[in-house]
Length: 190
Image (cartoon, rainbow, N blue to C red; front, side, top):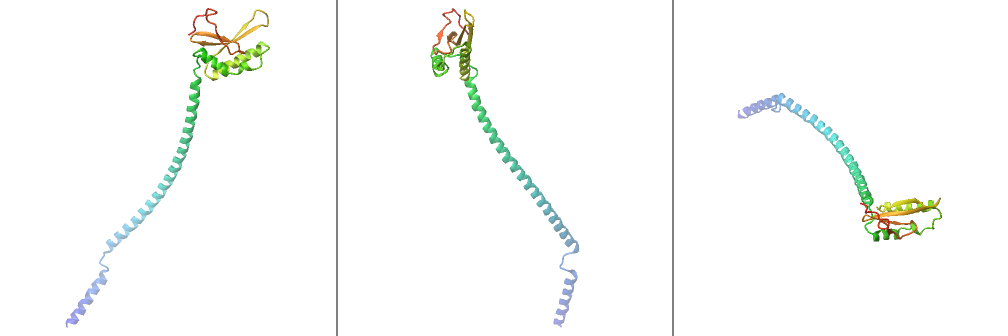
């Protein structure tokens, strides 16, 4: 009899188990399935956002690389501009010679006076203008003086520089300036 009760009890337990499923209600199952579908949709959304973010990051990296390249070009241009500015500062503003020695040394280094002698006033004047231009390139001020002579078609051409307020003059074919302020009784130039 015990055996029978055991079999009947076992059979009833099995019926209850099979009839009730796995012990999870349909509502709980549906909730879990809905949560799973929602999680899968969120995963797809996150993957799409990740792909978009990676694309943006790639674009930003390319843009950054271009900006760095542009910056390097700009830095090179800045260095070039600084070098040019340093050259300009040596020449500008042009200045007078500080001493007769400085003028003499500059004239000795300039080779205009060593060219073939001029036979007409125009070429002599052109030499004086060349000396003026050469001096300007080196940051110095030299003036050119053209005066008529006593006779027709006679001209005097001179280069003039100011040193400590005194006028110094010389011919374009000479490297021997003389101080003329005292000779012509000219007051100091400032």
